[in-house]
Length: 159
Image 1 (tube, rainbow, N blue to C red):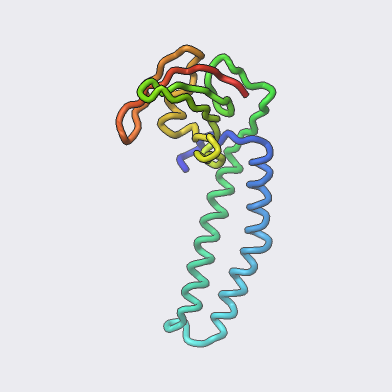
Image 2 (tube, one colour; image 1 turned 180 degrees about the horizontal axis):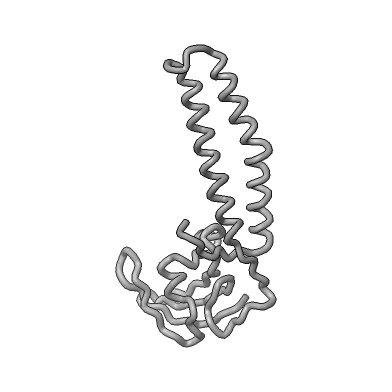
């Protein structure tokens, strides 16, 4: 996560992140410490694979906790009732026509944490998400993706 980037999330996502962080700190962290203590009791630490694995697991848990704390610290909760649908923005559903394939698809622009392409939720930081931001109905957008350039026409914007 770069610097103090604002992380836009819906209230339920914010609450879920707080619950996940609480679980990691109150349940997983003590369990990791206990695993290290038990492995330490098994003798010589130089040849104790269990101890090494427990220390590594603890390190990964601490990294996850730090990452989640960063997301929560920079979170800005979005209220769907205040979203302006005159332009594509985070949390809007944007219906576009791929001018190359003539296929129409609807994407909801969401935070990285909420992105799930199978559900039509694309990250605001993805090439398509970035390309659609600020566009209005009728705009034609060129989006550069790894496979080349896609041309989209914005058909509709809703919440």
